[in-house]
Amino acid sequence: MSWLKRAALTAVATAALMGAASAEVVYNRANSGEPETLDTHKTSTVQESHILRDMLEGLVTYNAKGEAVPGQATKWEISDDGKTYRFTLRDGLKWSNGDPVKAADFVFSYRRIVNPETGAKYANILYPILNAEKINKGQGKIEDLGVKAVDDKTVEIKLEQPTPYFIELLTHQTSLPVHQASVEKFGKDFVKPGNMVTNGAYKLVEFVPNSHIKLAKNENYYDVKNVQIDTVNYFPTPDFAAMVRRYEAGELDTTDDVPADQMKSLKQRFKDQVHVGPWLGTYFMIVNSSKAPLNDVRVRQALSMAMDREFIAEQIWGGTMLPGYSFMPPGVGNYGEPAFMDYKSASPIDREEKAKELLKEAGFGPGKPLKVEIRYNTTDNNRNTVVAVADQWKQIGVETSMINTDGKTHFAHLRDGGDFDIARYGWIADFSDPENFLFLLKSDNKGFNAGKYNNPEFDNLLKQAAGELDLKKRADIMKKAEAVAMKDMPWIPVMYYGKSHLISPKIKGFEHNTRGVYPSRFLSKVQ
Image (cartoon, rainbow, N blue to C red):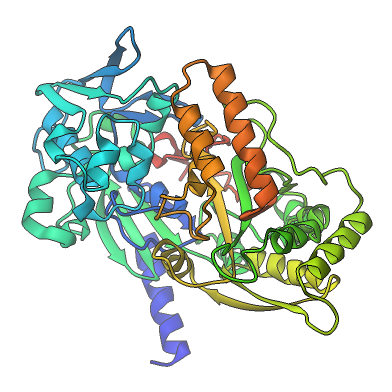
């Protein structure tokens, strides 16, 4: 099929999606990546979470401000020892097909995600639940998971130990339920339109890969009377320049990012339609520390030292990001100030000279340059970033090549243990606690520790922190663990995230928040 024909068909499809009856309120929402799956127990990206949180709701959910609030549960009680939680479901809850939502649905869902046969890479986020880790590692029976239905309206969850962030943890996509009958009837196809049954504000109508995902209001949702948008269309738009053009043409009501190098002109053209704010996350370059010569800490430190983070944040990202000198961004709950790199305050020239010395000690120099390949997911911002990094590394004698793929291919490659030298990665907090960052580097975290970092000292510190009930002492132990990572540099922090959007004046109720969650159910649109 010719490009012109494909473009014409895309235009027709977009027009059809937007040309709904005048009484129907349609929200056209950009999403910077194509979902790999809509199986909530197999997803791992922010782009997938936006769609899933519109369709499914856990015991706890987010409000418009990104705060953890009651979801399918109307209340919860916590035992005196902090290890048992009892959730009471709302009256009259229904799935989109009319089936009642029962406590047993949550038991089934939690058992399914920790079951090793499911292959959920994100299951380890639920390890605070009693026996979850043992079961997920094939060392326990699924029936022993600390989640049970006391009755149809009461879910009881027992923990291994008190977990200060547990309620917020339940807002994560891993705690979104699935409809048992649909999973058992359709197998992996339960997520397809016509098969997928949801309990959130919207239900799945269409999923056309590389085109759009269409959601329609779920009339069985308990708060449907307050859901003002009838239809939500998600358009995958990794090309941010094209995203802006579609927004300007009125094809999109919001974007979930902007091309950073256009920020100045965007503010001039769109004025207060440009929304910029903090986001609790870090932009990394993951180093594959399991392969030579990247297994040499001197090489990893040299690569980190040679980065001019201020230049990248200001010139490449237009001031929408902040230079990152720690694994965790400032502002993480239950923590305090991060463990910064010890060369944070050194001048770029001094850091560059030290980087050259480290590479020389590691056996590299003018006659033997270090050669590395950066793998990244395709967006304008990422491409400009890795080009800048490669240019900065060139100053210390490093030769850099690049390979790029679409987002779902890139992250699947990393998740599934694919080979690489250095890979671009971003981590946005699932919950505001240091555990949600540092767990990425645990040696047994097969789903996220893509660079195969393995340091027993680091692992032992995290184990020690997990058993510490005093939050101040726990934070001190966590900071020691972060300091170890900043010395070993298995993941090179580049920037702390900011989040930028274009928001049409027609969209009301949008509230920027550090959690980066914007449920469609809280928005409205002026026709």
